[in-house]
Image (cartoon, rainbow, N blue to C red; front, side, top):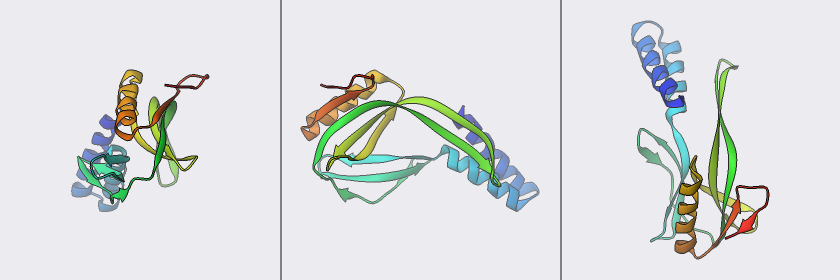
Length: 148
């Protein structure tokens, strides 16, 4: 739903930009591009580096940094919301249930490396982190947290 709205806004913004009002078209186009862009993090296990990324249409931007000493990976449920607003007014909010993987270091500092809506997929990725980084997995998807 979010991607469909983003693509519709991009096309509408481009059309308005070309046909009538440059300013309004540009604003709608920027809102659409912002909706379709993604944020996240990548890790290079070979070089032991990571980067926080912003991606739009497959192009990724971000600077590589050395990995800290990771302690454990946490798998937990969260709600992700996307708010659409223009000219200071909120047009709508989209909320979705997701499962996130955070890799913790130095106590409570963390980096979010993965988001999904499939619990099994999340635990497969967490297992990969466990093997690659030699760390434990904390299952925080239920009220009762447990180490795996």
